[in-house]
Image 1 (tube, rainbow, N blue to C red):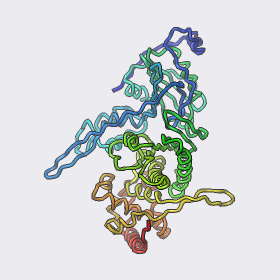
Image 2 (cartoon, rainbow, N blue to C red):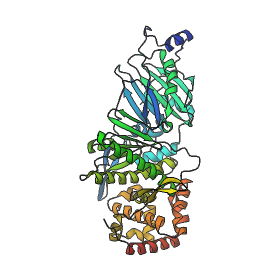
Image 3 (cartoon, rainbow, N blue to C red):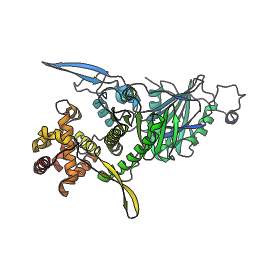
Length: 504
């Protein structure tokens, strides 16, 4: 859908010197002054002051109906090109002169996803399941530098000049500049991640003037990793940004909710420390800044979170790499609404945390992921003093899911536990399993984390470590949860269920 080749555009020294001064008398296309930094996903980038942000294109859902003998059903499929673009596009803006600015995180060339994605019917189809796309993405691996020209061709559909190296400034380790009819591109690598390429693409109303190289070279000094920024509270396009690493909260809630958004940010920072207490970050890993987006209306939330999330109040979107939350979860008192929002963010925040610390080629089994998310959603936080220092401490509580397990304990037997641990995402979320699978995953994690003997409690992190190192779920379960251990867990769970009662 987008292409590239080599055409050289020489830039003479005398022209470049003239351009750097940006004299208004130079008879070339207007060069915007990149004099304001805008926070976008993992970066701050320089753009003109008069830009307005564009909403990302929606990923379309295509519903397929299948029939096998007497059985029939539907499956939601997607255009792999749209999924490919959505996972790489970080932001897009336009200015009053008609110039368009796009920030992209270059991850893979498009032919990785338009050729040979096999569906569950073993056919090549125009539309794929998200799981099929994810499997293919993980098999492709990270984009290597020598394929950057191909990536630029795929993304823009244009013929570019040969990249020219420009000197890195500030947070930028190295950068390249190239141009095409109607476009200029700055491809750069940060000092904090020398293998991840980013591209600032500018589509102009006229052909890019030779001034672009000088203007973009100076712009390098305005690029910075968002995780290194000071706490901010800026307004852009009706969205208030509040940032205290490792989180940034974006919200378009009314102004009077400012204190609540700030307290939500503080709560998530405290919960992040709780997550790491139970499942530590891998050593020497630089975990990226996590983004939480809180929408003021359900219509905005559903439009952004996408198809399939109509029933939800919050979701960790791997497409946007954001924790997306409705700010009006239910009617009732403000305090009730805020508690519901905290519970949702604690739950989805764990999905986001686990996603950020787990290699992209690894799929953590759904029972482990949802079991911990439902475990953390019950937490209450308090501040304690230890060794003269204040730190947050979290306490897990019983969940309403306790009564659901009592009504349907089929996954609490040794055989049921083995079945639960073997579930794929689709089977786990199927309507015949969803309620019992969620509840059983919660009680399993809760009991192991809070009530079980030490040797059983340790199995959760032993299991995750094996998955992290590349073991299949079957291999990890066989090693950590043999039948003898499942029998012990089952007995402990049944004793726990008979001795506890959930009180609202």
